[in-house]
Structures are given as C-alpha cells and as structure tokens.
Image 1 (cartoon, one colour):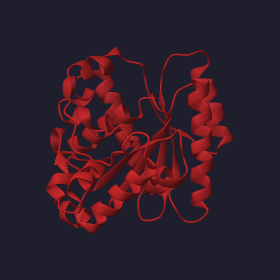
Image 2 (cartoon, one colour):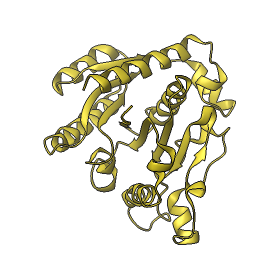
Image 3 (cartoon, one colour):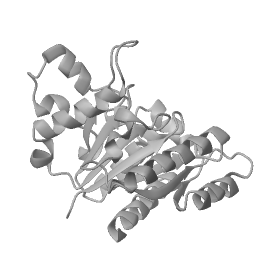
Length: 254
C-alpha cells in the first residue's frame, strides 16, 4: 500500500501528543508498520511508547556526534513495534526550534529511513501554536499528505485550530497537505460540540472523530504507557481504534 502520511497539529496542552501516540498504537494493532515523528522541541511525543523513557533526539545526536550516527541511533522501536523519532530542539535560548524539525526530516531522508523501514503510516506530531517556518514543514510537499487538528471547545484551542486550518489551506493551494478534519478531544466545557461544529463549518471542514474525556488517559500516563497498552479492553481504547479507522477512511477516500 502507498504510505499514508499524516500530520497531527494542535495547541500545546490539548492532548495532541497523547492522541498521536494512541493512534500510532491503534494503527500498529491493525498490523500496519507505523512511524511516529515527534516535531516538538520538548521531544516527548513518543515517551509513553517507551515506558516513560525519553529517546535521543536528532538535534542532540547532531550536536554530540556531527553526522557520525546511524539510523539505529535516530529510530527506536516502541510499543507494538511503532518506529519512533524525536526531532528535538535547540539549546534553550539559542536558535530556532523549527530548525529541529527541518534537520530531523532531512536526516531521515539522507540516511534512508523510509527505504529501510518502509512505513505504511507516518505520523508527524507537531506543535500548533506556531504555524510558520519549520513548524509548517511537515505540511509541505514531500512530507505529510493530510493534516488533522486536535481541538476541544475551549476558546484558545478553537482559536489555535482556526489559525492552523488557515495555514493548511494556504499551503493546500500550492499542492501541499490537505486538511483532513478536526479531532475533538473533549474537555466537557460549555457548548463544546456546538462550538467545534461551528469551527468546522467556518473552515469548511468536518469533525472526523470525538474522544470523550477519560481519567484513564492520566492513569495510563501514571503507568508510563499509552492508553492502548495500559487499558486495551477499555471503551476509551475502542474510541481510539474507531478514530484510527475514521482517519484511514478519510485518507483513502482522498
């Protein structure tokens, strides 16, 4: 099958990385070869796919080893075989965080990661408070084909999602990634679904899936695991599985 390349964006703190990691686990559960690329300077996108252990970021490897490192140093295998990469960020107070994303994507291509691992699904987990420069890189040509935005009904999350959607639509006119839709990570605020439905209409998109608020997410993180690993038989895990199926359906429909 042709590789499905998905960028997941959202405001910081909205649960984007947690959602992405659970989606990666759900895709892998279907027998797909999955690669998750963390594009956040905190380099913690894949931490719960590794029992709470951080992995070396690409920028850390470049800083410590120049170009003298291998794909095995960059790409580690997490829960259920998910291939994990963290772009990382600059030394605090120095440099542009977006450059870490560009460096990571360039190094993955340069060292032949896609040929060696042949992933069927690639997930880019991208901080969405900034949608310029390096942070826009995953939605540009040659990387993600689809962008999904995680939001809740909170005003700042809605505002960030609208900004991200505008950026995606600007790039889409140049033949880059298309907006696949919104993922609602519910916070149980007033008029939540109504507000997200209004956003979807305003940006001419759709709600792809809804994840209910669940304390199991925090309980799984206490266990240093994704929800899919810690509570695979739960209703919340089934919600993640359904969301994975809905996202694949959108991508396959084109």
